[in-house]
Image 1 (spheres, rainbow, N blue to C red):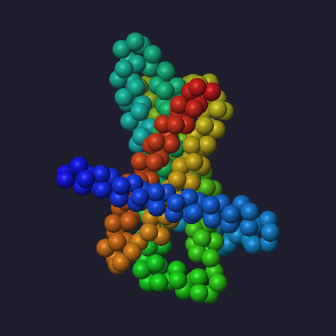
Image 2 (cartoon, one colour):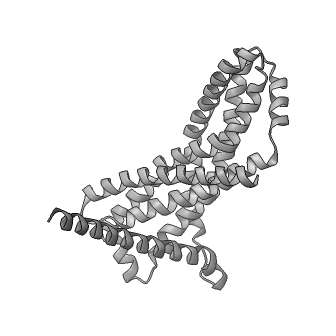
Length: 266
């Protein structure tokens, strides 16, 4: 009897997961159509809405991204100096900070910030509209919700997250340089020269590729969770929380995948 109940629960979970995958695949398919195919057949993008979203997810996030990236650079420099001082290689702090920030920490930290800030906002906005039956009103007026709401959000994040990542890279390196100059006694010009010699174009490009993948994950997950809202305000809160958790988890999984990929083929 217990075995039958256990099998039944597994079956229900499997069917539920299958339904979730189908809905997510449908959203990805529709988003790809309205983002890449529709503009070529006369169904243009909502440029003003995209610019508005770019301001919200990009420009308004600059202060928090800069502050956190700067302090991350400070921390990496201090932790690396603690070990490198033992072997008399403090100048290598610049190498470690520059490479770790541009290849890994810059894209990852920025994506986590944006997932908590903008991904949750996507879910809350779309979920509130669904609860208020505004999505049904759009369909009644002949307006596709994916084109009207979701595509501008995806496009805005695809543009702004790499920009925020570059900014985080710069501030992280400056944070490391601050520790090097005022605590380790390293000349600023020497630090920048060492950083320049350590970095190659592949370091920056790998971080930008990661940031674009993270942008897709955060925007799709945030919008999908918003579309799954049912009931009232309680469901909006639950889906918003789930959006942040799932986005961060998927970002870290994707980061691991790309890190292995660049390690094998880089």
